[in-house]
Length: 377
Image (tube, rainbow, N blue to C red; front, side, top):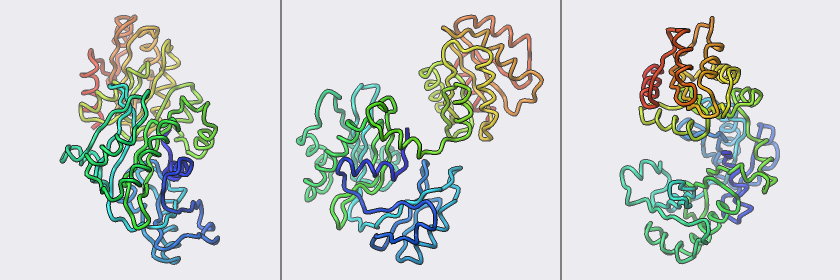
């Protein structure tokens, strides 16, 4: 579960991670109360999408008049389809140096991955592409501790300011504890800054491992504060495992691994997935029909890729579900289908016996993804 910035910073307090003084407001009436912050104050839109600064969602107010003006401008703003309903007001920091740090799980290595760079404040993808040597990567086994000597070595390799090594070591150690003991999938700080008030985490990008929800009661509190897109509510009511994304190729598959692979293949062919939708094992006709109904409600979807590998799931039942969901309808987008495994031949025969000018059959995952991307342009 991806957190809002203010939620991530509430975890900073729990793990003694230095960050600016702040106040949360949900409506303009909250400004009538004392804000107890020193100007200048940064007004930050709380949305779960990047690019808020470029969209006008972050502004620096030098006094109470500008604070009121900027708060009014940003509250209610639409940023890439996300409505701003919460603002984080934060004391502005005099930044001397900006760094980047993140902690995540490298599944291929089965280890934690730490990434550290002296080039904070910019997209880390750009740093990795243009100056890969400026991004230090280090793996830590989950069974081992992150030693102080290792942190010192990372600070040295990344060319961080040695005059602040003690403070940097302390905040890196605490961020790692937050990542591991807080059961996070991702902790990213950009920038981790040296300021007039010391080393501070000025931003917060945190994703929680919801499999650990039973260990942390506050996970529930965070979850209740995060708005769920209408399409996800609809899918949940239908018993579907669905996550909305920001692309245009609708994805339906059976099994999380297959769906994730499908997302990757779509990306490799130049497209972006509009969703993650796993119909699960043993899906029947009504399940497939429900999945297509969920995608119909998403106006961003321009094409749909159905990728099924039959094991417990029977491909002929999937085919029946597709026919049932599309019969007599004028489809709003093309559907590309790839069936393989249990009763795939029978499923293909069912589809061929019920032709539709907007339904296309492909033999391989790659060719299906390529056609879905092309049809969705």
